[in-house]
Length: 176
Image (cartoon, rainbow, N blue to C red):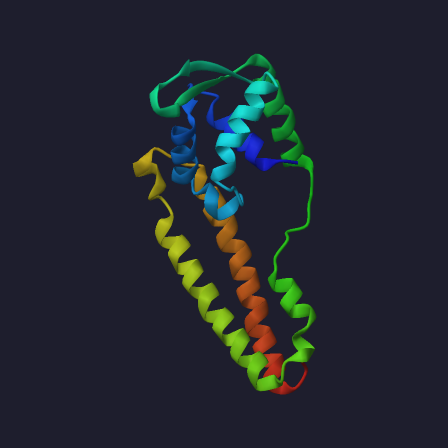
């Protein structure tokens, strides 16, 4: 499933845009934080989806600012992919789990220090996301975009809880 396709198509539902405008809209929604979207792939994706008939080129502007509009086929594809995203459960891929797999390769003091640094970073991330709640609307993002932040806050807090418990287990000799 290509979430970048859903993001591009969904962004174009209301009005035609060029690649830069699509990117700015996604940045306003904070998609770079929760969707793992590579903004450079937007331009490639726009051209590819135009070739596939999901988008129409409505204006070939000056300086390469091509404006795209979603077609009926694009709307259908957006809704099809959107519903797949609502119903499909996929594992959350986090490189930290690779590090956890080999925690036994670190001595306890180093492991404890690494966990403490991670705890501090997670706490800072939660605080930053909490401060961002409600601020994106000033830049044109819909209110429900905050729900992505709330979900991320919940996931980061879950990891933070785990890390704090792991620190205690390392101190007690129960880990690794």
